[in-house]
Length: 96
Image 1 (cartoon, rainbow, N blue to C red):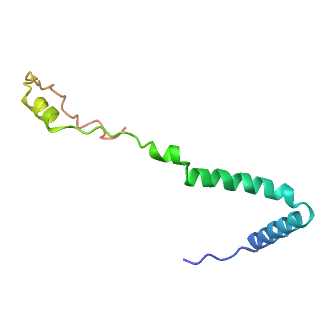
Image 2: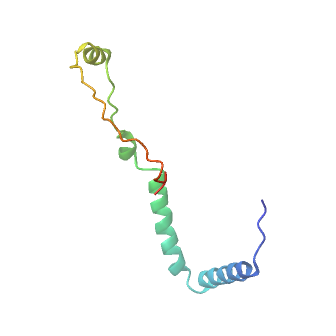
Image 3: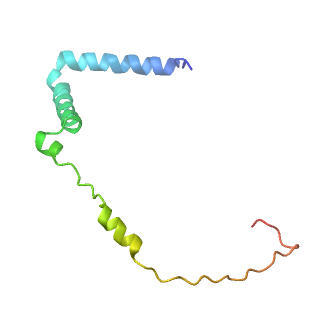
């Protein structure tokens, strides 16, 4: 679905572009330093250093012997009991 450009959005985008160009021409260091910091943080997040990449979280694997132990273990049977519920009254609504 194609989105129409609102005139307000066009004006705001033009003012943002004009402001960025003006900042780059008059004081480029003020804009480049935050961009370099942001770029460095982004690259470190996307491509972590070698030490952080090697440390994969350990996944516990269940071995066949531990699975067989749990299945052979006898469990105490749990007695289930039925709790009697009340009957629905025809006079009460089904919703609250």
